[in-house]
Image (cartoon, rainbow, N blue to C red; front, side, top):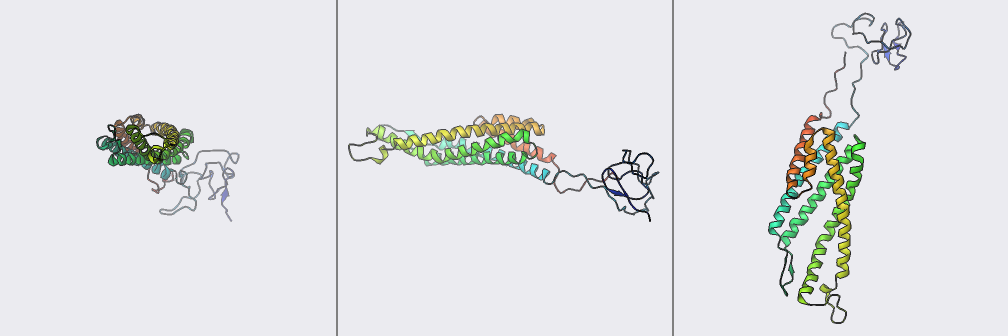
Length: 292
């Protein structure tokens, strides 16, 4: 009885009468020459390749398709979508910042009038800040996925960008209370009332110096952390340009530094991410065609 031959190189079984392994091309024991020696893979149906197959017949041995690691393309496409969405949010945040300059009504009045904080202007500012937090979060999520594909480029920016998220959260949590307390203290100053009054009746609005100092310290720490994270985010975006050979990422990273110009930077980020997405294969597509 004729049995299948086992390849000494990869251990796969092939049909009887073949000289070379159909998987790795190693010379089989039944062929001329020492077994295990590499050799060219002959075309199917040629000399030494065993019985020719009838028309329409399917051989019982196949070559497994060479596929990339599971999830690689899907992870990369998801990361690029995050960057594209971050670019759009940068445009929205820039527009809100411009709008806040027109509607803000923070004005230091004359004596007796105090400080007036415009609720609309503060709302615009807080909304813009919240969107900036979302932008940093999206870029961090993108880099966290790209770390699995390109650790040397994105591991450090991904770690440091987390500091930016923490810092921006601290800034958003303290900016409004600090402005309100500063407005109250300003009213005391322009009204000639004593600060931290201990001799007369207590005035709550004039006893907040310590609280203002504490909030200012938290705001300072948040600003430092936010700056570190922002720089790390820009480095990560810059390295996107080197990975995908697209200078629009790098130009966009530079423009994000400057107010108003960051709107153009957000547009460039969106377009560059979309271009990189178009160049990536869709996951779940047809497998590569075997060579024979």
